[in-house]
Length: 322
Image (cartoon, rainbow, N blue to C red; front, side, top):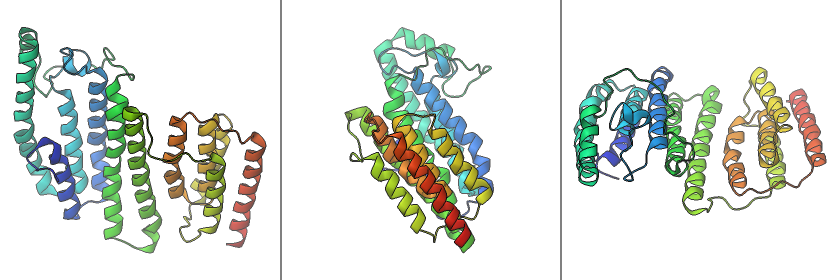
């Protein structure tokens, strides 16, 4: 594990301390979400404008602060402290964060001055270091989703960041465990696994054009999902007013999608109708893998229609006899 006084290891230690405190509750997690998503949005905005060490980026958030990416980190790390519900960590966080990041920002600026000279010196005089001192104006200037920083680093990282609130939620459910909360615990854990595996898949594909998962026939995925969903009854979630419309909605939406996306929507819809939404999350990275490979589905619409009728029939039988 990296040292806590280094920028790269700081967030890991915040998570570690926050989880060990066992103070997190759904209230604290909900309270943290605005800071969490603001941090992620700033990071993506900054990465989409950045042309690292090629030029002095002055567009988008770089017109407001010299280190917008670190500003995004501030909100993201602060959200972790709030998620933890551990008040001493929240109070100490600003001092810890500044003591680690200020020297790092100064070090990076010295490199920029050596490379870009007077141009960066002028930029440094006009724009504050990491916190905006003028009115924030959102601008798309300089931003591009095609920036290689987005796919190769920021999207995979964002997917991993989405695991943080789920991790605190799973810890809370484990700490206050009862049988009524077990489906929520399973759903939290399965969602974490889904986001993490998807981040590995995208990162590896962006950098090496290779994928984490082996090639899988979509037909086998759908058949396996239906069989698994029908026979595993111990994880049933009694939430029919929500589950049934969601499942049928996914199946309906699948007819307007194409190829792998259509297969995913049908499978996820079947699993949701079987009251196994946690399993619907877990199959998502597999379909992402197929989508990134640009594999075309050749099963035919008749096959899907048969599965649709069979899935609805099995769900009705289950509801009648369970």
